[in-house]
Length: 265
Image (cartoon, rainbow, N blue to C red; front, side):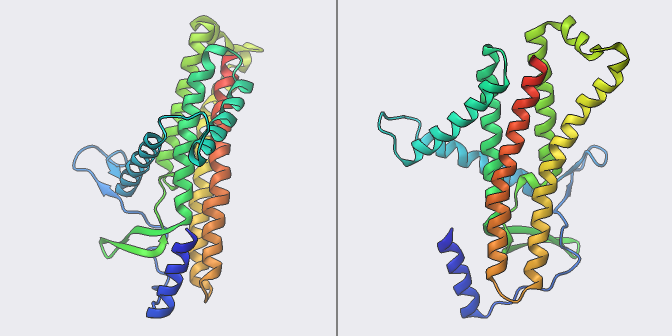
């Protein structure tokens, strides 16, 4: 990545490349309206779909490259083992019933890896699609790679999935009757509050990640146009993409584990 930054910086100096002026297209998304359905359900962000599939293919390819674990691990195997052991320890501490530890770990690890990679690429200059003049143009190195987690639909999908899975696990662990009874505890008068509390989980879960990633991207873009040199945007890209992105991926994963564990108790 450092070599990439040096190459881009050298290219800008040698060619005298000038970034375009900040305009009304900042913060706009490429939205495609499907020929069927009703708004807003028939609107799709193609970049979210493309990049999501690219990240999934990349993760599968990476996993396939280390599918045979050795007694003396290499660098990639050591990194993966350390990461997965940490997530597994978090899961064991939060999930009270042994039979739900492995399924919860699988969900949490998958979410973490996808969100982590999605956030990391938001700190690397790449290709973006920008809507302008009733069309779409693709820019190179004028912005970072598009990250699916900057789309609220992606985060909301993950959050709702965690909510549904947590209650499916709760029904299996407690039985349907005890699961329903839990909404009326500690007092039947608390039923509305308990329902609202459960519905609020995916809202806060998704908005927390969306706000940090989307807001960080806009902040970096605005500051990049305000400063007259390239080092500050590079630092901000790295800070928000790598540091903040990693923290937010971990926070989202920990909350997913905590939500699942809390309803199984």
